Each structure stands twice: as C-alpha cells, then as structure tokens.
Length: 293
Image 1 (cartoon, rainbow, N blue to C red):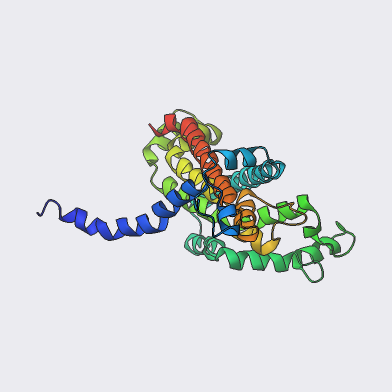
Image 2 (cartoon, rainbow, N blue to C red; image 1 turned 30 degrees about the vertical axis):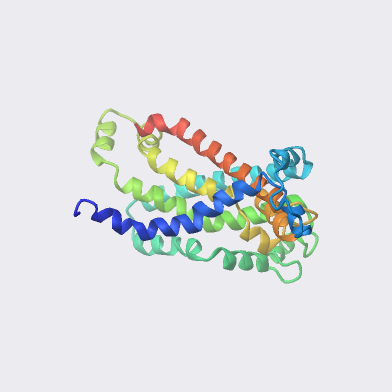
C-alpha cells in the first residue's frame, strides 16, 4: 500500500492534465475528420457527425492563405527566436562577469519578462502610435521618417514591430537559462585552457558553447514552441492586419474557428501546427544532442 502512495498523490494533477490538455486535444483531433460546420448550420441533421476523412486537411494544404500564414509564422519564429538567443547569450555572458552592482542589473533584466504579454503588447502599441508614439516621434525627429508614420500600415514594418516587442520581452528568459548554466560550468576547464594558451575566442567556441548545449536546447525548444503559436501579442497590436499581413497560423486558426465557425478547418490547422513544432524540436535535438551527450 505504501509503495503505491506516491501514485495517489499524482491523481489530482493527472485529472487536471486529462481535463485541460488531453481531452481537448483528442476532441480537436476528432472534429478535424468531420464537417462540424455543416452540423452547426443543420442542427436537425440526423447524421450528427458527418465524417469527411482527410478532406479538412486537404482543404488546408491546398489553401493559399494557409501557406501565406505559414510563411509569416516561420518568419516571426526564426527572426524573433534567433534575435532573442543572440541577445540573451550576450546578456548572460556579461552578467556572468564580476562587476559592481551585478545583482541589481540581474534583477532589472527580469522586468521585461515579468510583464504579462498583453501589457507588453499594449505598451509597445503606444510606443508605435501614429500620432503620439515615442518611437515614431523619435524616428521623425531623427529624420528617418517623414513626420509621424503608422508602422502598422505596412505588413513588413508591422511584423517587425511585433518582433521587436517580442524580443524585448523574451530575451531575458533565454539569458536567465543560459546564465544559470554558465554559473555551473567548472572553472578548472577554463584554467587548463588558459594554461594551454587558448585565447578567449577559442575558449568560447570550444568550451563554453559545447558545455551550454543542454541549456541552449531547452531555451530554443521552449521559445520556438511559444513563438510558433504566437497569438496574443498579434491580436492586441495588429489583429492580424494590415490586410492579413501579420496573420500567423494561430490567428488563422482563431479566424476560422471563432469568427467563421469553421471548427473542423481550424482544428486541422492547429494539429498541423503541432506537427511543425515537433519538427522544430527534433531539428534542435538532432543538432545539439551530440554535445549534450
């Protein structure tokens, strides 16, 4: 009886996971093979679940809006995560050094990450305001733009404005993970490398990066998963505009399901997103796993 006691403690969390994650996931998988839109329109239909097989996936994969949203999602994910990694690594390396006030700087570094995503989105939307925005005013005063301009009027500038807001918030998360890993690296390895005449450049690429591979993999996988399914910051800042210029896959899923009641179509997009996220994770593991071992 005592041997099974730990499993009893796990039952509450198991039921929470079952109700919050597993059941909705299975339901989404199920309705992706039926035409729930027809059932919504025809509630008196005796054939309640109209099974259509892979028709929803076929419609998604032959839709130009899906590939347009996929490209925007990939651009957002690669650009934002790549920028966050480089900035986060630089911050972690700086904060790993000894200097006066390092503890205060470390605390200040976490402030952007502590902001809720909605607050961060509203804050940056104010910064980009076409009439009174801080950033648009600064660009105008520097002569980089012809007066105050609306960055959200162009798809390219709107997407990059969102990326900047996302990088500002989440770079601290990556730097926190990498800083924790840097603190655990053995000093004796660096001392031996210095004795052998290795300069700072060689020590960084031959020692630091390989030893950071487990932490890098964790940071990249977590941030890629979050970035690929980005929705809230886009919903607040641009609502997918202008003219769908910032409509990612998550936003396309929202539009299809919640705005146009195409629940089966939206579920198919969401499940395809899961496949892409798994591919990203496998690529990271394939590249970094050799160093993890």
